[in-house]
Length: 95
Image (cartoon, rainbow, N blue to C red):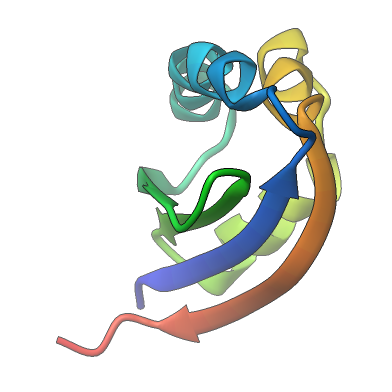
């Protein structure tokens, strides 16, 4: 059952370019080191606000990834420009 991770966050002012530059490395790290990672799409909502939509093969894969946090340099680099977590939700892909 495909699990959808929805994370809405704000970046520090003027650090959007840093976030975007770190994105490919984070995705490569997820693909290499996080079993069950399917894909991710980053949506810009405003100047400093974002929605990250990540698909996981199962709820267990998502839980294992969440427990790892920013444990690689590439993931930590993506997290660095983030100033505030707005919301985090989990659901199941319906169709």
